[in-house]
Length: 188
Image (cartoon, rainbow, N blue to C red):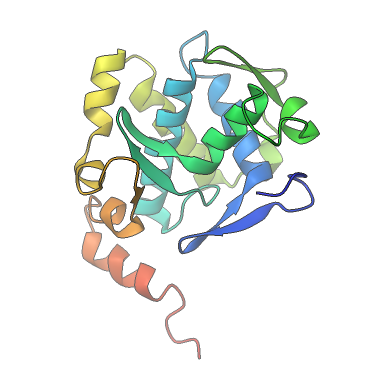
């Protein structure tokens, strides 16, 4: 990621493109709607379940992140990096786009205002809300257990989880996997 998030909003991450400004808005959206205070663990897990929902229904992640199989479950790598910037644990800690959007108080995400809804599609909001609903009322142990799904189990600890492993959890996994192999069928 570049030192100025708005100058370099995208970086290639697997078959998708990471959109840092949209990730910032997604963190804000979730932080204002999960259990309060908004613990980073619930925020990041809500993003995982939202992205898994969006991938299964619409064939893409909401902001194009990649997931790492960490000890306590899947973690969106780029979104986690943004939280580390807000917490002052990154060489990019002077990044004004993050610092003006939210801050961290220990492990709590503090969003100064709500997310800009104009950055999201209807399907983004639908799946963000579902991701939040899946996580909001769970204890740490319940959420950890729920997120240790087949995609997490198929990955080594601290390795990137493949899109295919997350797609393989979809009800229509064969169709989704075929789409992911060639998202533009019929195009030369």
